[in-house]
Length: 301
Ligand SMILES: [Zn+2]
Ligand SMILES: [Zn+2]
Image (cartoon, rainbow, N blue to C red; front, side, top):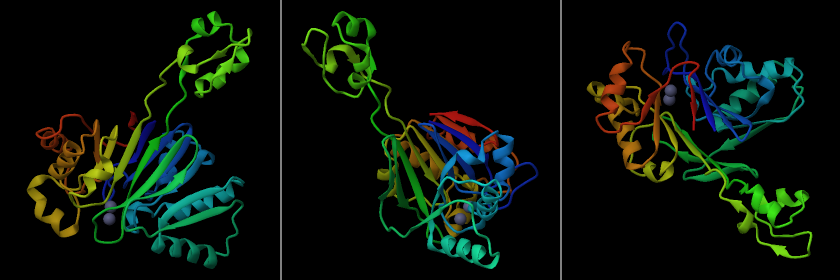
């Protein structure tokens, strides 16, 4: 799993900085999480092929999270995409995209599979053999979802010497890593556990933007390897955070600590601040393993 930060800011971008968007690569699939204005430039700059994006997740209908979506949908058609694109979004964003397609009389070169999110508790929205995606409600001024992406159990690793010693034909090696017993050259059944070892641990990533802190959120991000949580405000502006239903540094740090996550990524900074070291200084008083969103930063999970 790898996260690339495409935008680090809240609603108002600054020169060279963009509103919130992340690109998650999981098991060789690219998932775009929120789609800020200028996202196409950021994808180009980070050498991410548009054609490789398979899924887009839109958290809510505030412009800093989806203003880049219509542009990207249009460009993909101009590039003659023929592969399906799946977009999960709230009903409001669904209607805006439909209206644009209608009034621009645009017929797309590919199938745009728009899936409306209207869950009021955590639900599974996507599954394949490699990973799953869950959506869960956040606490914001309009209907908003967070997302949890989890890798599935990985293949076991073959212990080659043991497999050869047991006279197993190499055509069965793949089966063994998929937890299947096989028959060796002498007609004896070999248990996969005898010639393989545990594969890499499945990784997980949770995304929470935008949201105020609330206790029920903890169970939805429990134990993830990387948590993205917005920190629009420093703690001195906690009244503004309460008013606008955003998080402060202290909220995000508390969520990471109580959720026992392994690493915290913070972003969605208000344009009123210039020194981002202040964000780190405040978070580490509660949760140590924190990294800050910066355009182009890549985080291996
Ligand atoms: Zn926002
Ligand atoms: Zn918002």
